[in-house]
Length: 295
Image (cartoon, rainbow, N blue to C red; front, side):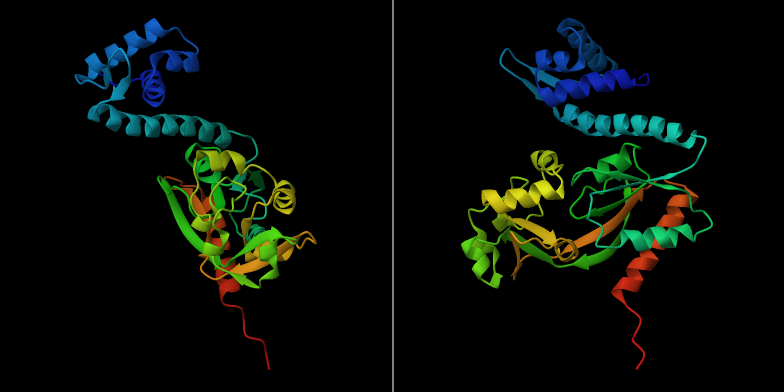
């Protein structure tokens, strides 16, 4: 069997995800006949059927399901290699840190300060994005290290938990539930989170639609909570930094806490990344175990 080409894998992934040759061809910007020929040639090259085709539908075979999983990983790795090479070839070195604004448990200034003291320190470029965008940025070579709250896909990443903190319910101050000092998740049945999820589920399930919606900034989300009846779960540190007259923060007794993680690619050999990890974990340890006050 000859080596597969990235082009072949891209063609197959498009068809496997769309399960429709016409839509896949449109997505790839090509005509359908050459795409069909390319998939047939790929099957001939591998000696297995990847797709079951009928007049009504296209389905993946077991072999196709395996190739889809591995092809995505291979394409991602090739793209990441190119981006990392471009970044490494820049005249001035730097460290790209991916995070969602205000989702740093208040640690970021102290981490940056500690990192500056490391011998391997380089300038840090902050890459701000929506919830759920940080792990893909690492795997795709667009970031070197990330601060991100759970949950996230850990495939291909090394991680280190930094800090676990409670979450609070953010709700409109004039909402009837805001009159209560403490709630439970069952009290939120029928309420919706800004990412479209059900509040009673606790807000720790994140799908593609939720990732798209989570690109809203804090001001937008707070406005939605104030005027639209949505509710939101926020880390305690974020609530303390953002008091608003139109928002009430309430304890939800059975709401799980959230842990902030540090993540970086498993194959990273960057001294700057290693130094950043040391600085971040040291700062987190200091916050978790503050020095005793002298009597």
